[in-house]
Image (cartoon, rainbow, N blue to C red):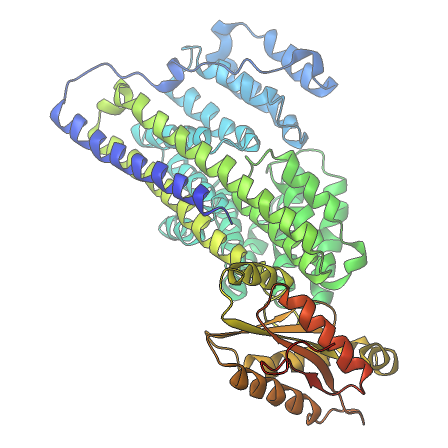
Length: 569
């Protein structure tokens, strides 16, 4: 893993925290009253829209918007937002024409506070597909501040739910749950409260699902059932799709294949017939849930190409939690198929993911803070500045913690053989490379006698049991100075460091006899043959030569190289 990349990122993180602290001091010492000026009055509209590549639907939405005079934005803002809703079903992020339109409206200066809050809430949904975390935070904080100024209880709750969804997308599921559980909504009765409750429960269920807490996940999904009774049309269809996809994920965690498949079978036709999307991530959630099911229960249907396309299609700027799931599924797949080449390649891609997303977003966070030290919007009320900077810093810390844990996890995961839970060939190559400069070690190379015949006679499941059991025996002698590895199908290696050769050879005989004395469920005796050598110019080749000699000398033996006898010819 690229520890250097982590160090660079940690440096950026430290800079961000220092800037946050300095910003507190600067504002505290300079309480100059200036005019309120929302950042949307200074917004620079995204000029990357390629109008020549608009789809017919996108062009229709754009043409309808151009027919509305700027002076009518304040009276027709609901119409503008509704016209954009059809774009939620479009998966393209390069031409986010809907968000582009709403930003034009927001920067026009024509909207009343009520209209601006309405458009901000719609923009939060449309712009979510861009994967720009900083923009999402900006829009959400602006929505929350404006909702508090207007004392709009429902919009305050919606903004807090949106804030929790950002934490969720960054992998901060505990923080997201805390925000959601602090929302008092049970006895509220404002217009649309039922749908707000549904969103609240869906996010809680999703967060608990990511934490593998199926009990809490199902508890909140069950709360949704009575709320959707009075719903109808496309909105109800959206909720049923989400509910069943989340249920499928929980059932997969519980290893209930039948229930998981049933939930997917309910969601699939609903998604195919969906005409209006109320949520941006339906299709991505469906992809990841379906591939999770296939990997666990129907591996022949699993598509690594779909997941690679999903990762590449996000340009590493999508929902971090979804990207994490996609990477995890691919890691599991390559691990199961023992495709170490692709596993290593994917590890490098994950390093790029951390570099591209975390370092780039960290840099944007820093630039955003510096920019807003001079922005009158933040100077108006210091308490809002404190809250906003705290939130931004917390987001950064979440990403940093996630990155560090993931680096450690991947570094360890990449070197473990799944079946035997001992070191794999990758770990062996790395460790033997480090030992080349130190000749104070010895090596045993052995494989299982007649292993192909065992597989052919008793089946591959029993063959896996043999490998797993031998792995358990090897783990009983593993310590700081004895490292064990499965380096091939039935081939194992052991590295002894800092021990004298006699002790190492006694350990080898212990392993050979332990394997020979195992009682299996079938009438069979399993034996091993091996070659042992002290450190020489090519220790592996010497061990392999002795292993070959042991095979040709009757098997169930280990041939050693004694110091006084020299090489075996």
